[in-house]
Amino acid sequence: MTVVFDPERDLTVTRIIKAPRAAVWRAWTTPKSLEQWWLPAPAKCQVVKLDLRPGGAFETRMSEDGGAFMPHVTACFLSVEDQSRIVFTDTLTGGWRPGDQPFMTAIITMKDHTQGTDYAAFAMHRSSAERKKHEELGFHDGWGTVTEQLARLVEQSR
Image 1 (cartoon, rainbow, N blue to C red):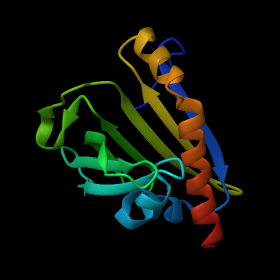
Image 2 (cartoon, helix red, strand yellow):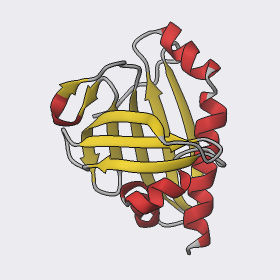
Image 3 (cartoon, helix red, strand yellow):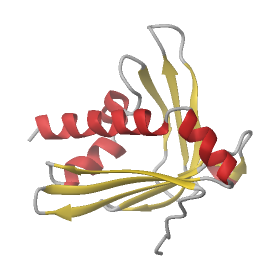
Image 4 (cartoon, rainbow, N blue to C red):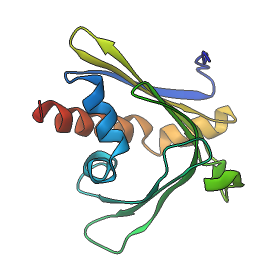
């Protein structure tokens, strides 16, 4: 399925990661690896659920400044295509249950590139107001930072 970017409702971050696609995929799909890069440092991430299948739960918690872990993402995987695409939404939780506070659907893509992996994180929102809210919350800084952390993690392990 091809998704068309809607600048009124969508946000995206792209990067060429100088590591094989399989390494990027493992960093996304292994809880201990995901915890190392999924939140902008110095915040800490805890993966609670990572059931990589359509309908599977995706749940993380965050701790800022070493405090207690609080809810971060509570979502449902819609599609998981080995080493190429992950789609999740907070509109639903695991088992296709309705989510408490629907906000976005994310599409993560990974493609081979001559330098490694062409990586894209795409956030779709139901309205331009929701998109603007996400942008004002720091989408580009936050998602840009975690993409940088992901790249650093997999590029160092080469």
